[in-house]
Image (cartoon, helix red, strand yellow):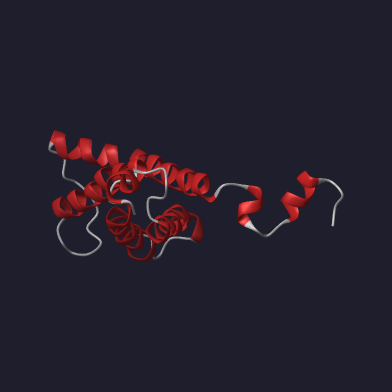
Amino acid sequence: MFNNPLLNKLESSNLNSFVNEHVTVLLLRVTAGAFILTHGIPKFIKILTGDFQFADPLGLGSALSLILSAFAEAACGLMVLLGLGTRFASFFLIVNMSVAGFIFHLDDPFSGKEKALLFLILFISTFLFGGGKYSLDNKFFNE
């Protein structure tokens, strides 16, 4: 439509004409993993200091709920960031964010569950895309 090649790329619906899809998956994976770590590391520190006060949305007990949430957000978040066992780690993060968005924040206004739902979409995407070309999954397992 445009006479300018750059503007034609912006208008294109073909992903490959605008950006390398491997870079897109890398950006998505690293961002999702890094952002969730900001929630997981404080939970992991709570465990190390012996402070097991935490919400118990599933009735598993606050200590187990904290441990499971810290595992998902810290350990699995780091795995997603590195692209190591990306789909495996994303599965636990999907479960964690589903509990946060649809159970823990059930009665909250949308603004209270928005972050959990955004993380949920990010981790569904990392589950579907996998680690991508620039990941440890690809280096070790040729995913």
